[in-house]
Length: 226
Length: 226
DNA sequence: GCCAGAAGATAACCTGGATTATAGAGGTCG
DNA sequence: CGACCTCTATAATCCAGGTTATCTTCTGGC
Image (cartoon, rainbow over all chains, first blue to last red; front, top):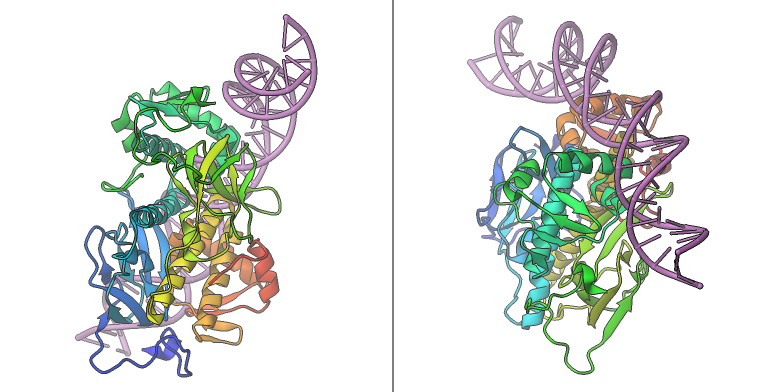
């Protein structure tokens, strides 16, 4: 299998030390799942040989890979943050991996530290979602995602009033968030207004039809916005 | 300042509990830095009021915002992973924030856990870099970034041989990583080959001129690829 | 209330990358 | 060895979003 050098090298690379007898290994073939969305993973994998990747698939077949795992990598470090995988992981080649427990000791943490810990997990997940949005979504979908996310986070912070909240961003800020130009943000917002998807003026956002905006954003069913 | 509702609400939002006397607060005006690239932050901020964002600026003025912080958010949770900020953070509005220590207890960790911890930090950082690449870079720049990163990671894993390493990805995988179509990946790779930037065939990558490829990828000077 | 600079709106035109189609080159498994 | 399938290559056409330019409307400072 290693004629291509995808696996561990012969020379000692001080990443994959020799497995102690009885260590728990797992093997995967290309396209096999190391973890599925929303399901507790079998364990944390320390890749010995082969490549894997994490990705998200949109309903219409668009796919964005959000991480690659090479030999020596842990798959997937985010799992220690105590959340269920929000994106599946599959093998790209034949894979051999050491399986290890998935948790870091959070027992000793204060409440404040736990809150910070949770916040770290949410940040990682949001970032992974935005990779999909920036890599694969249209201007309209990007804006819908952004506005929904900001509203939802404001709501959770107790700062939304009904369907409305403050949104102190310029169109240029929005452009730099969504990877678009200010001109195109303006154009697209106009068309969203025209279709009754959002009202946005004077740094104030109103979402008349939450469901319509959610559909516009083509989020994964259980995609977290917080 | 709060006529827009950007700050904490009047009702109890159970995020920002009343500050104990003597708690350390910080205030920022729009465009003021909460943290600069490569400099140890003053502390971890728990935002009470106002918005902030993290971003990266490319040499030619392209900017990608990679995170927004709203009232109640911690800024920036990644900092507890013990790395210096790789992207600056600025206030978008007037900001009031509680300042707190920046570390989680890593003393009790085993070596294995520390390695995992480090790996988590690298993943977060890589992901933030890819937000910039997917949001703001051209096809050529994206491919250069990807190939450099994969080579560099293979090298660190002891799996590179001189300027070469295995790269068991199809052009379709590369497309799904870079947010492009397979056709355009092929076209762009052809033109990179023609210019002597890379050699890529039979799942094997060779980088004849590392420096040229680095420049093509428009990375930030101290941008980490591992 | 006035002014200056920032932000929003809009139109005309351009281009990087998407789309669609077809053909050849490997790889792999009988 | 040949059949099949996946991957790579390449050309032609199209379009979402970028670029440039101008004008208007806010906003904050005095």
